[in-house]
Structures are given as structure tokens and as C-alpha cells.
Image (tube, rainbow, N blue to C red; front, side):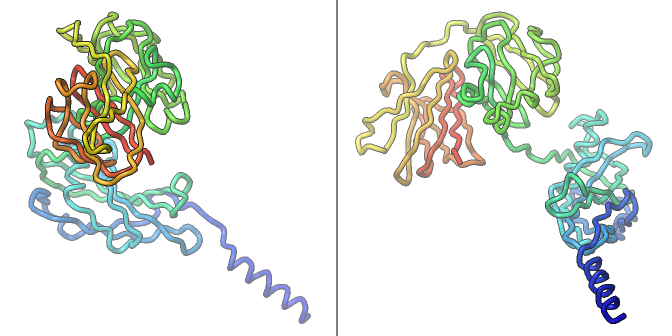
Length: 374
């Protein structure tokens, strides 16, 4: 009997120390709205809102991340999709979200429903919910609280969209990840990207995000619906995407709007831009600025090189034909968050820290990118 009791005790302890994960059902834990939401909230003149929520039951005590999501409506019947905010918290009793993030989410929702910037400020009905998941297991453990509603007014507050790295793969520069890395789209702000060159008019391009270009993940490439579509504009997809063709074999600016998942072609008025034999980097890696780092023309009028600086406080410019007659600079200090600029003829020296970078410049538009290599 004593042995049996010991065995039973050991088994019971094992079960306590090895709990079984269970996934709560959506709406099974309660979100409490702050008292202020009983009134219409002026998001332009408040700093933050703090929500609290019951802890969802995953079967054992664990580190849980909580994030807020919001949806917007004007009439209370037609709702936008859920818009996620950036702030996360591990304290269910104090999920504090800046009102700037809430306003951005509501603005996104109202724009999705057809409102334009000129119609703001607007009063909206707002739904809020909490998204919870176990740390490190977001894909498999995400659940949502029940919803709460309130009313808020906001100006047009779209949060800034960080510029991402997108690369062109296609007839030029080539159909490979290594080729795509040399043809970076130039960010225009607002999730819009452009590339200007003389296109071929046949299966010119698809678009890769950085991680997909390096891994040559074709399933994630962006493109059009119909292979070889040469329309002046169209819809972008990234599931079974096909190659986009330029309307004709001439100089165009191709524009990719990721936010609206659309593209367009703008034909250049000047179809005979100035030709250069060489574009290079020139800078203070020699005292007299005498050693050019030559770039490669990967598509007409787009130049690329990867180069490593081994000294601190680098200053440089781009120049044509190893001569100061045509050079581009900018009042710009390069960083991972500030990697694009428009060059100015005879402009200021560009600055960066020592390290390895990928350099891009278009000698028609004077747009340039300097991307730090991790």
C-alpha cells in the first residue's frame, strides 16, 4: 500500500508539472472598456486609452502578449476590417494604446469604407477587441476577446508607412534572386515604389520583397493576373502572380502601389536621355578624393555596386564619367531607416558610417538608395 501511494503521488505530480496546452475559444475572455468610452472620445486631444482584459485560459500560467485591434463604421452596420495597432503588452490589466495609433486604425478603416481625406475630421463608431497569444506561438495560439464599442472623432491620421525593400526581377536585369538584388525599386513614400528605365515590352517584371528575392521564393512574387499583360495600369496580386509587360519597348516609369495593390506605366517624354559611360562613387577614402568605385549598369540608366568602407565618417558623392562636371550629392546621412534620397547636381556630400552597403542610382531621375548590408 505504501508503494502504491508513492506511485500515485508521483504520477499526480507529473500531471501538475506537465500541463496540457488548451486553446481558448474566441470571445471566451472579457475585454473591459475604460470609463471614458461612455462619451464620444476626441482622439485629436487625448493621449492614450487604457483597456484591461481577463486572462485567457490556456491551461496553465504562461507569458501572454496582448494587442489591440479596432474596426470602424459610420452607421454601425457596415464595418471595416480589423485594424491592428503596434503597441503590445504582457499586463492584461493595463493595455495602454496611444490615441495616435487608434486614430490611425480608425482612419484606415474609414478610408477602406470609401471616405476621403477631405471629408475628415469624422465621427465614427468603433469596435475594439484584444488579440492574445502565447509568446513565441503566435500562429497557433492566437485568440480574440469579445468586442466593446464606443464613439470617437478623429482627423485624418494615417500612420507613416515605412519604406520597404522591393526588387525587380524579369527580362532585365534577369530572372534570378542575384539579378533582382541589383534592381531595387525606389521608394516614393506612402507605400509607393518606382523604377525608370527602357523596358523591353515583353514579360518585363515581377516584384520580390527582400526576403523572397534572397530565397527566390516565386510563390510570394508580386505580379499581374494575366501573363504578359501590357495594359497601362492594372491590379497587383501575389498568389499565382504573372509577369507584367510594358505597353511598348520604350522608356517608362513603372509605379507599384503596394497599399492599393495596383501598378501603372508612365511613358517618359524624353526618349533619348543623356548617356554616360560610367557612374561611380567618389569620396574621402583617399585624402584627395581621387579613387572612384565604379558601378555596373544593370538596366538602362540604373547603376549598382556593393562596396565596403573600412574607415569612420565616410563622405561621398556619385559622379559621371570619372569627372566632376556631372555629380550628385544630398544633405543626407544614410541609415537603415533612411536609405533613399533624390540627388542634387553638385549637392552636399552624402554621409555614412563604415560598413558594407549596396548602392543604387538612376541617372535620369537622380533617385538613389544606399542600403546597409546586415
